[in-house]
Image 1 (cartoon, rainbow, N blue to C red):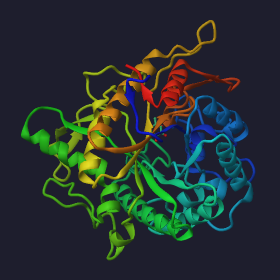
Image 2 (image 1 turned 30 degrees about the vertical axis):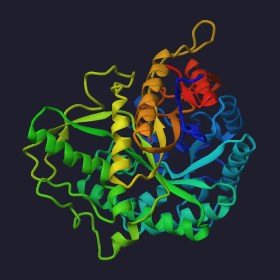
Image 3 (image 1 turned 180 degrees about the vertical axis):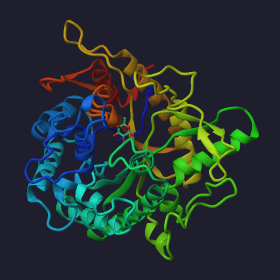
Length: 451
Ligand code: FCB
């Protein structure tokens, strides 16, 4: 018997995303995405790698579903590539693109696994970037149109949906820092993108509900636990501002109908974001659940030279007390506990789904072919204990999705960082369940974690 039991009906799942696993980048009428363009340009991704073939899931999805079934998963989070559905981001739907996702969904349903799709995990049709991308106000309506089309096509068999994956990450990395597609570095573009994405989110949510009122719709937000770097008032208030900036710029307007106060003096850059009369009513959406992606904490220090936000992370990817994954991210389970109880407290106890949590370790097959990734097991055990504790303290968590089912294309890092419960051979792309995968299967079978 498991020591820590989870509530009955708790979903044990794994997560993936289209560009990171599918490959088939130009097959069956798929249009070019911003990630195709970005990864094909030299210098953007480590070792010149790209997702042209990736895990070849476009051709091998039945194997992936069989593995998920073998692991006893009850939920599978994947994403739908917009340019497979609308190759140029607008107009007629490409039937072959839809066929792929219909076949995947049907295979999952046959295997007794909940299909749990995300409509946008970063692969914008390149044609829409050419027309201005997320900073362009009109993109909100285009996105709602796509969302409605997909819901009409799959809403008869998919009941639980996520609109976006990590809106704060793709706007900041893509438009402010330029380290992800489309590789732009502009504060004004970033600020406008934030507001277009929030409007797109609200419009899509309502368009989907108009197709079927009983769908359960949420979004997978990226959260981090912001803590003051030093024990003083300046860092404590900086941590508060950074928390509102990084954690609340999307969920805030969605659930509360207002942008959070991010500036030292209060307020938010509403003019620079091009927030217009009536917009916030469009953005507001009573999500059926809040998706939580979380990896580690962030230590924040006061930044006196910055008159606006006046805060910055003291270190990248966590602090310096916990162990580090091979990606250098600090292992800090308490961050997940803190974020879950914060959401329960500040947002009126919403239904929560952990939509991503996981770790990169490079362990590969030993001479006998077994992948003994015990550090990944330790990671999951620690974070699952934190989830269990948060549930005990009142957080209404209904499911957990390990990132990721498969080793896959980790954006600008290429294939070096391996997050999978399943090893993917770089040459053959053959899949081998790691020891962590076997351990996770046991957790799912017992609906709980042993000590
Ligand atoms: C998240 C992304 C996901 C994956 C993990 C490691 O930010 O949503 O696609 O890359 O990080």
